[in-house]
Image (cartoon, rainbow, N blue to C red; front, side):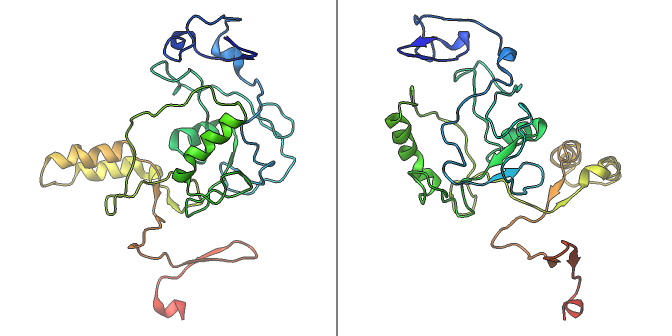
Length: 253
């Protein structure tokens, strides 16, 4: 769609919803025709001195690293995803593998790296115009910056569900970081078989809440960093990376 001196790519079914109905349609093509097409990012992490990491290992990536789509240096390219719908938006979505399960899975599937511009306190790092701000406080500053650079077509507020801490009602932030897991998926069938032999009270828990949890079992992340949690007595050698789990005070001494 032609808008002034720019061309916007949008799903045809969403032209009216996005306020683009009546604009001149320059070309039509299928979504799959866009896969691997390169684009210029709104914020290049290297320009703003932000680290890029490997999605699967969390290792810091140094330049140059071949891009899995173009087989060249760091680029930004379109991927496909079955989670993109015509319910709202534009038919084109941005993927941030560091901040959300769906985005992370998409990045993992396509072998993408991810950018981590936020520290563990929720503060934006790097050399952005809004660095040093808490992520929620930075929202209006980001919009202002995009407007100033003429990169924002329209902004609006959308009502949607969001996770909050059940203790203090603080908004939670999705955050990708290294974690310890127990590979419970490897014994899924044994867990289900064991559950079938248990007499549950109340009975509906057996094939309800607990049964559903077993059927949809994913590897258990047990190193949750809660302030009321139990510390994990695991030390890792700084030289070779060998982990050592101490199982008693005697061994620790």
